[in-house]
Length: 393
Image 1 (spheres, rainbow, N blue to C red):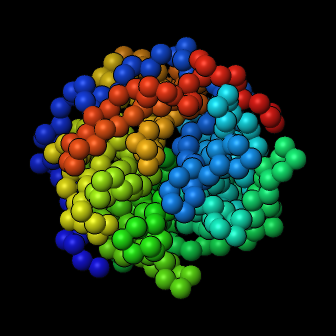
Image 2: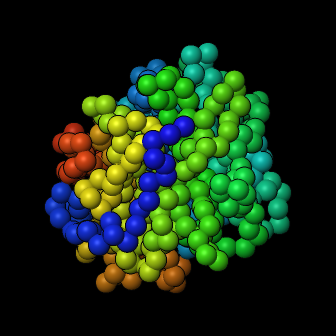
């Protein structure tokens, strides 16, 4: 592999950050984002893809996955109970298909974000993060990348994943290119990373790759990176990183790539409190682009910023995912309290201001290294034009 990897995201790029209409999401109207699954928080949405990158369509429904947890207590506690949930979507709304996997199927104590691809044999490769260890007395923060490949069963008004699939660890941080992730204690936003596997098939060689949110060494601390792994003969191996956030940020989450007009666009999300120093950059979607998968990558819009939350609502959305048609999904996070970081507020106040559902969709335009964002004209997840979710409680 060559191409000048890794690209370095540096303070020089952050010096170019500026709030503009081209890179700022509109303020979200709380009335437009009611909970679509009452009683549960939903976040980190991703589609089940076909191998060509399109969203899988089964019996007239698009298939999606999301993290879910009961909407109880402080919203930050949801990470300790996270399960992957299967959703089906048609033009009228969403249908809840319940947990993707049986209780206790994961080797972790929680299921964190990933990606999924529908295979020609009718199975679905679900790549996800196993956090902690199954059966542990309290949540720990060991992270490893798991593949489960259940059969997709559909018909008779039911869609589900077969429960008998093996959950196999395919990647973990190697301690050489990427720091090991074996921490017993920590909290979201303050731990090393080896998670969020994003599946990608490179049209240039037809092979499968995974992008991983990872950590590399920085003095006596750590810094964020995007790892690359390749599949050969059914086995996955780690490659050098594509991007390293050179001591400016320790968390580059949910990395994913789309190819648009022969350019490779690499996107990731990060939060204002994970910059060094905190608030050096806004919570947002960031990206780099290159002429090929292996680079050389350069930051979009000179700074890397693609979509930021508006300054009046600095935490209104998170976990953006760009689809091949350039629509962008995310989830509704915290409504503003004069810019206060509600992760540390009292549980009742944080809960009252937490969205915990799918945010209104946005749309990107891409012109080589320049991007702009607008609300989606036809918003397939607009809760004002469709019924609330149906199905299991």
